[in-house]
Amino acid sequence: MRRVLGILAVMALSLFAAPARAGVDVRVDIAAQRIQVTTTDGESYNWAISSGRKGYRTPNGVFRPTRLEKNWYSRKYGGAMPSAVFFHGGYAIHGTTAVRALGRPASHGCIRLHPANAAKLFALVKKHGAGQTRIALNGVAPDGYSQFAKASTGAKTKLAKASTGKSKLAKAPARIKQPALAGQGRGAPNWNAARGEILLRPGLPAGAYGYQPQQAWPNWR
Image (cartoon, rainbow, N blue to C red; front, top):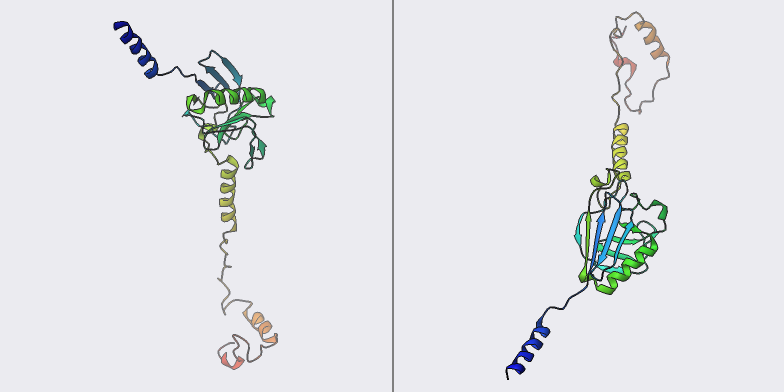
């Protein structure tokens, strides 16, 4: 009897014990431009990456994959993103054809990998599951500028706004300098000559705006 109870107890423990679940641990070192991928199966990889270049920021933090896209194309930036593992909004770890740029910041904020390495990571996440995948990003890009950039706002936009402000200042009407009126009164030396030129000009028609007949100027001499 005791033996039977012991067997049942072992079976119960085996049923309720939490099964060992495999997982994928992804650590991105933005400063070193490297990614370390390990699994509980014993697999380990270390690859070169490209994070956000000047004017674009790659976020720091710990994330879980939100979706997997084997073949994805960015309409915003006009580029292919094969084997994309999205982890934060539009940010993803994906393959790139710009393999010569790997090892330095070159993306719009995503983590770029060699297409073969991106495909391997994609397969690992798909195998173990998004819920068992941890993606941690830490550090600042070596260029020292991307840490100040916003996620979807480039430096060109800021420069464009600055130039717009300058153009508004340029379009502002300049103050018109009025000529000095000193010495132009009736007592000026050339007043009689000026009056003669005015009287020799053809008169305005009676209906013209601002017309005044000459007899209204009896005091002019």
